[in-house]
Image (cartoon, rainbow, N blue to C red; front, top):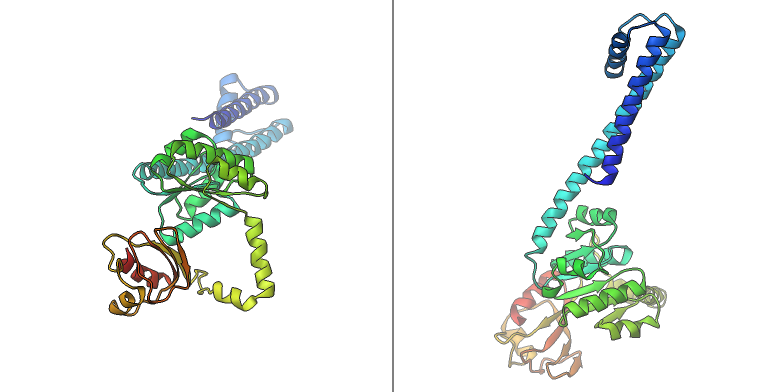
Length: 331
């Protein structure tokens, strides 16, 4: 039992004892009751909220009324504490389940910080079906993420041991979304030292900190305010383009998505022209908008004559179902 719960129990015990002592002493004084009779009457009043003996003295009657009101307050406080305690037990059970699931994760992502930016990152990963674990040192925020169906734990991601607890050594990537650049720097340094091959994306609030974060080990650095400003400017200057890019369904999920797919060694596309493979395999709804070659070259708006090699990365645009169909062909 933690210190808070122990303190609540002590308060309840002290309050109940004080009422028992006050009632017993008062009835002995005002009604000339013997000790055992006064104690018995006090106990019955506190438990049943009803007078079982005739009280003739006005002071004794007032004392009985005050005892009933006070006991109701203690009961209300007790019920409130019990409800909070049961909710805490439920949260602890969910966290234990998450910890067991984390032990089995591999090639997953770690989202550090579940504030406004981190919750958006977690939501996108959840929508994409990517395995991830969210960390936030605020238990209330972590519980909110659990309620949304995310895997989350109330851990401080700036502590190396906590990153180890969520399997950073076997993770595929990490996103540092804390609202303080110095904290993100600690996370990047710790994560890079624990897993040299980890792909790290970090948030930066100030432009001059981008270089520091990259030096610390971040592969990419994003500035949410800069991205938001660019998007708002695009809304004002090119509204039709933004409307096309932000096509939405009724439930708010994006219809058009962009995905990166790596051509595998056994891919049906490997060694063949892009256009011929797509024709031979039937209609594929997704569109190849760029090819990042295994040799480091980059081709935007490729033609059907482009030859695809193992290790090439194809940037695809299409609906989720079209991208799934293309993935079976490419990978």
